[in-house]
Image 1: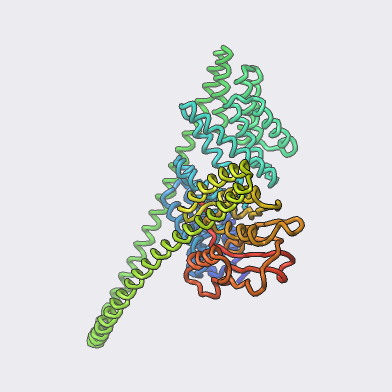
Image 2: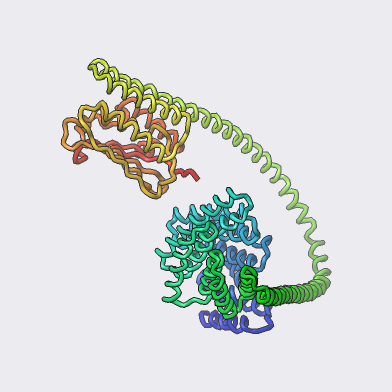
Length: 622
């Protein structure tokens, strides 16, 4: 079997180098290959070689691979092959077909929960919109892909998305509105700088060269010539280490542009001529005629109309030639497509004729068989009809029961929402009572200045508390800011200072958390742990990601709790509210599972103080 596969792949290589391609023969060869995942993987790896060489072959290989993947039921390969087919259609400028296959790939990637494939598809959709000049949609999908790549720590795609977003903002900088132009350039430079830094980290010389050349153009547009020259100098150093004709062409074109901006006409002319030389070496007509046009304009700036006219004629000649070649290529593509469609029609006609002949031969036999089976079919039909009526009655009954269940679930969700609001509102007076009690102590002790400061801090805290209390969720950053304000308030009245630290996993940077979930535990530690009686007192908070949950740990090195008081149902009123909120957040889990989501450990189980650990559902702000 392996020998057979190798032979077919060798046939592909020969096939793709021929001038006239026999797609039907190649498809027949592929269809004879087995449909196991090892073969599909081999086909996909081989197809990568032909994306740049032969798009027809690349498209055909991946379509056949997709059929085999669907037959095998392997979701990963179905998504991968659909993605490749979509990419092929993008290269063929067929966005309609590309969008169909990208949608199939995205649905399958989400179904099998494959983040890497979902990331690639999202980036590819962004490229499709970018190519079609739908920059708003392109920016939307590039931004989504950037967020996913950051979450997955995929630095390669992150660098690509930063560069692509920077490119879109650079296109937007062509706006005639000065304010919009400046704002777009600032964003473009910011994203391209990040792309350069990441390319340097990845040691990707090609990306570094492209983005540094782009940055030099952007800084030239902002008339920050020192920065433009800085990046061009960096480009030259990289090219000296590893020569690259494409990068050299862009480098000298940018150098010429800068020289022209600074009225250094002789240098600009020399640089443009050098850039044209490299463009010819690369056989890149568009770069050739663009540099000829810029050279003509530079001669015109110098008042040399003779050379300006001569180079403008060269620009027109090469541009018109390029357009003619492009039109010829398009015509050839149309002709090839016509030939393929013609051949497909001929094959369909032959297939139809064969089917017609076969139908005539079998018609009499079918007539005899049908006559004998009519009575049997009538009996079967009657049986199926009776069973169908019974099934429908059963289905209607089940549907009515399901409707009742849905109504009950809706009522339950409504009750849960009201309970959550009730629990949050109960937290506010509990905290306020303790705070006012502290201030009352300061006033009785004639510490008026400290009391005034505490009242001001309390006003800020109350404002923040009231703001958060109407929200179901807030960001980790908002929660950290609130807790720090609360600690500052408590520290001012505490008999002894203590260290307070919060450590948050980088993966939870944009995570959301219900408000007032952490503060009650800190308040209990401050009020009951007797931190003033221990050496180097501290309260520490750790917010971590564990599988698909957010884990929160609150530690102190106070006196701890008695063993008999660790039962969570016997803790403070505020902590019992927290447990009730957890039961609502994890609706559907049994009591044992919910109890395991909030644990309290104290001496002698911990080395010192009390450790509280609980879990929350993981959600993000994007």
